[in-house]
Amino acid sequence: MAKQFKEVHFNLNGRDVTTVVDVRASLTDMLRGDFRMTSVKKGCEVGECGACTVLIDGEAFNSCIYLAVWAEGKQILTLEGLMGPNGELSDIQKAFIDETAVQCGFCTPGFILTATEILNAGVEYTDDELRKLLSGHLCRCTGYENIFRAVKKTMYQRLGKPWPEG
Amino acid sequence: MYDIKALYEADSVQDAVRLRLEHPEAQIIAGGSDVLVQMREGKRAGKELISIYMIDALRGVTIDGEENIRIGSLTSFSHITKDPIIRKYINVLGEAVDMVGGPQIRNIGTIGGNTCNGVTSADSASTLHAWEAIVELTGQSGTRRVPIKDFYLSAGKVDIRPDEIQTAILIPKESYENTYGYYFKYAMRNAMDIATTGCSVNCRLSPDKGTFERVRIAYGVAGPVPMRAPRAETAATGQPVSRATVERFALTVLEDIHPRDSWRASKALRQHIAVELADRCLTEAVKRCGGEIDG
Image (cartoon, rainbow over all chains, first blue to last red; front, side, top):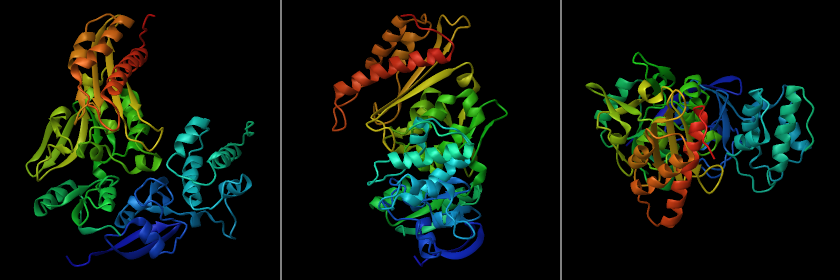
């Protein structure tokens, strides 16, 4: 069979874009190869580790098991899209630094995007709920506690509530 | 890059039916969380795919003209869990699919894909069996409906004809009215795991909450396909709502299911878990009906 290509139109980090992709590409391949969004990591490539997570229409997806052609008409957010106009970090990124939630950094972009979906819900989650919402990411360095604290701290900040002990 | 031989994208159900007939060897792909992973593993490498993922008409939960709950086959697990109709009438289904994989998998995984791959361990499968769901399939001559127990033919094999795709799952009113249920997934890990056994129970109590009017139970991973436990159901139906009934119901399960020893779990463990889950699920379902169990 001859190679098959398709033109895809979508919104990437607030900007309308168009590209021609090989239909065999995953969304990870397209974001890294065509758009140099290298925050989107290639980890397990079978939807287990969460390192390739991006937000599609506000929901977290593993871009490694998502066909690039399915991006048509979607709003896609990668970590690069969280940067402010003068290169500022977002609140959740700052919290990751303050809580030492980053060691090797490979899982960090994915965790931050899932955290973005969680925080955008504007809900006060219990610890158990937060742990469950973060469970689609593997981190082999931190032991998760600092990541959990960073997300929890930002949740309370955004809700304008004091951070309970712990 | 995936090792895909060719990709055919359907933009409507009719388009999908046409593509099915034109490309009989092609594999249907919905959300892809099984198909694309199997492709990476080499199992489905080099295959042609028919993508139905972009057919938005197959998304969403509604109550249809016959008062069935109608779940479009491409509705994701997370959307089922959040849906107000599901929460009101069949909350246990939303809870069951909230135990699939992890959050990102629940955003891409679809109820249609979860049933069409014919896997006994699918978290939706036991609940859909216990609620006597009906599968709607659409082909060139229109739609047909198949009770879920007949839809599963054997491990990994379901009743989809060469021109068809699954378009909806229906829960009839007779099934969901005044009925409450509970699902227990017994697995080794809290997330990103496949059930060792899954048990889904629901019941309807008499108006005075004293008698079981109807009890239904289904298991995943108790056999090659999801299965009901009819003797256990009979043992509880019409009986008083009591600890004795719940215990008899749970023990009778052993007459219905015949688990085997495997490397995952022994027969003895599986039997023990099956009885324990039946007991816990029915007890919880009674509470959700507003009933009480003595003792």
